[in-house]
Length: 159
Image (tube, rainbow, N blue to C red):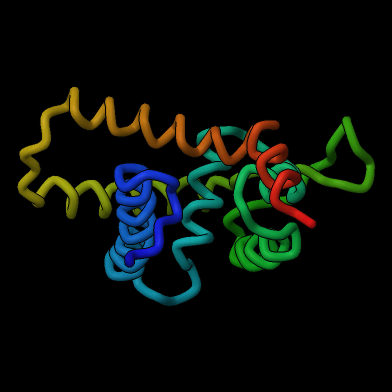
């Protein structure tokens, strides 16, 4: 008997494929961008700062299922590289905002260009509407794990 994580065979298949895709995308990122100083975690951090604007380390950690300490390590590395800087946070004296520098923006633009070049060379036969529906379904599943109902479900199984 195959163990099911998702509760139904369809949900289990979606979760299994999502996990497999996550690992494949992380590997692809390392192949495109190299495994040196800028890991896929750092690329994601730069992308989030570009997309969402300056944030504190705790804010970045809350938006991902990782510890504040992990994000702090990533931030420390990209600060040393001059890709981000810590700026005063008017809302909190002890938690500065992390902001992209011009160097970070230029590197991110180059990384995005390289990723786009690679992805455009892949033969994609999935219609745009199917991709939109898939994104919507994945967002809905992710939100299940982020809401109060998830917390209630966890409480129900804990002794």
